[in-house]
Length: 160
Image (tube, rainbow, N blue to C red; front, top):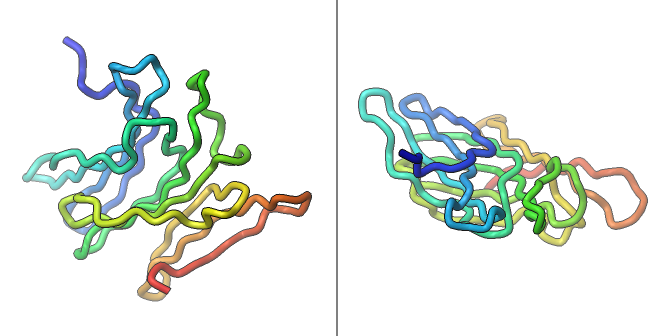
């Protein structure tokens, strides 16, 4: 018997003092080999696993790196996504153009509320992180410049 989850490529875990949130990539078993999606699922001890919610639908993008923060109001995910080339091989998230950082806000049960691109005009935003700082969520990421300068380290407080 085959599993409905094929080729889990990355998994990220968050906790909100009552349940866990898990984000994972899966490969479309019906595709020719290059279609992935990212799904989010909650798990509460004693209550089991909730329904999986697709965050990034099957297509030519894949989550390469993610951080998850849970609160009583829901979940916040910051994810670095990369374009999947025709070969299907995905290089490290720090590689070149086509790398994007997205913030996903979800309800406590995992339903997607909104998806927001961060730094969409940058040559490539990458290696995003999320931290609880002084009662607010802060997101950091690297911005690849379009010229020969060094990477820029970016910081933003969500909701500001």
